[in-house]
Length: 155
Image 1 (cartoon, rainbow, N blue to C red):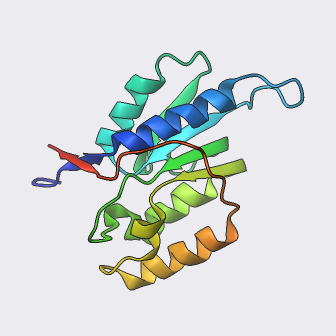
Image 2: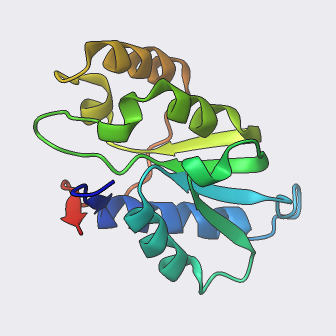
Image 3: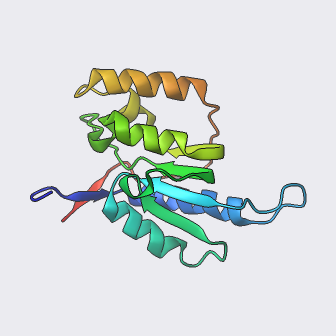
């Protein structure tokens, strides 16, 4: 859309890369999953992730949510991008996009995001309630890593 700026979050991208490296490493018990897809709502974040993932030998696809409609993958790593003090979740309040992002994994869904931004939103209480319910049902895995606390806006 004219005037809108795509967003990126380097910290979340770095965490996503660490997760993808773990997923792409063959394991004696499970092997390498057939398909791994990284989804993000923002084109700019997808571009950043594609560059960062190019060094990983396993063929990991990166797509915007809109570009992935109607498809599935064994594992989805969903990078939410948004992280701000106003708790504005942007595209993440669009339930159609959320449906695509959250229902396309056949085996596992991994969400990379800022819990406070997703669940304490003041801009859209309905979406925040849905995120609270969803994240309350997921098993949280803590990775010992430091990530950026801000989202960068790029034109």
